[in-house]
Image (cartoon, rainbow, N blue to C red; front, side, top):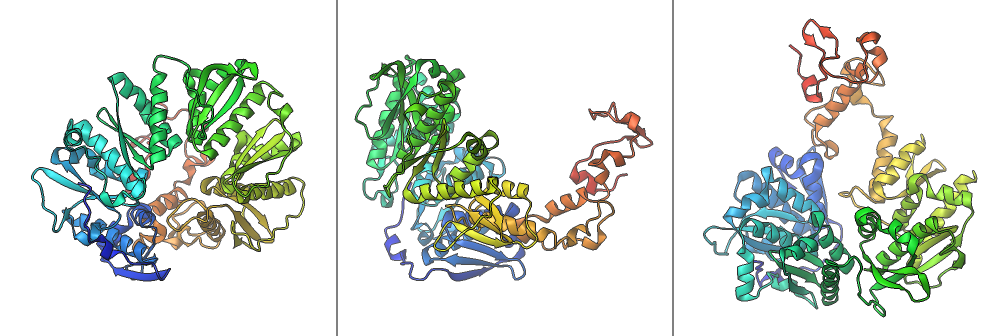
Length: 600
């Protein structure tokens, strides 16, 4: 259980050569299985291993590009995935020697962990960024009535998935793991993961009321304690398992205690003065309800957005008797983000409370700091955008905290992040004033240039920004994609994903063969799709049939002016009782799948 072979050291190979390529020949059935729906399985292998994985559709060859250790991991994961197609999976000890945790569980719990058609396992993989499969390990003895689940991935992700699965098993087979913990005192850690001060602490909870409160609705309390402390928090029975560094575990224990102290009190009496992990913000009494929200919804939203823990104390501010202290616990970045958003909310309700004391400043620190810039009202409105969309976009792309408190812009982060955000603001202001944007990309590591002679519509660029977490604009027949995250071929965010989407938009005007031209009607025979290339672009060819069908002979469904239904019979609500009768019965709204089949 959580066991790993001591010979793993012999399997360690230094990554001497980067971007070397290895390949694996596949059958058509294995290729389909490794690819998965819309390339999901292939991307998962790449994401967990960190290796670039590509399936060459013409030759059915799976290529692995990256450092040696990443290639070996990716190839091992691919073999495990393909083995699942034939039933029982058997792996060698060398395959589980590195970055793998073996979790034993009773056979009775395997079904609930796997879920219908493996849905629960796939959800766990996506949530924790791991790869999971039940398997037999050669050289490791089997126990009757016990199954082995292999968890592949990095240490933190593996431990998070392991504890989540143990919690699920414990709910199915009561005290299965707790009896082992009570008897042996084991925390089920993999010994090779216990490097430095990494480890696991436990905390016993009391009544069922405490357990329910510590978990929270949908696990919300557990998640926010984990986010604020940086510790993995999971409850197995009535025991809290806390995994992480020593400081992270200590923070998690304290935050959990603070939360439980509030069971019978609406405000906390915790004294956080002098703590490096807490920030205290004074909030006017009349704004406390506005910040808290109905049933604490406002504070919960702030906690979730910034990964912090927040609560009001029962003390008035020492220097202002008309204000109450709000405690924000968590990482430095999370605390600053939550603090500035609270200041912005208070300023909206109580104008001048914070804004009157703010002055422009530029931090000279290379480490985390805050720049304060005063702006005009019309500039603030432009930078905010609809529902704050533009402000959020710039913050995500630059990885800086960007918030408005009255007329002042608060820009926080390390020096590079602050400078990126200021650059992006400057280019947006040039756009607002219709100035020519001059971009010097020399020496910049946050930009990707995409040549687009035909141009890209502005609303399409906005969609790409939203989907990929980047900042884009057109200049000199190029799209400049800015963002701190370079991305990767297997990710849907970052500059790489944005570049891919821009190229796809630009090329779509030139490649319409599968649609048979621009005609809205007709069968599109000239653009008949080659069904054998079902894996192209990581998408199932059925998706293109759906798109082709929507542009073919059924296009009148989108344009009611061309509908065969008489105007007098058109209704806002479509149901069988209101639809016109035809010789074959009522006109039915068919699904895309049903439309492919000929009507009888």
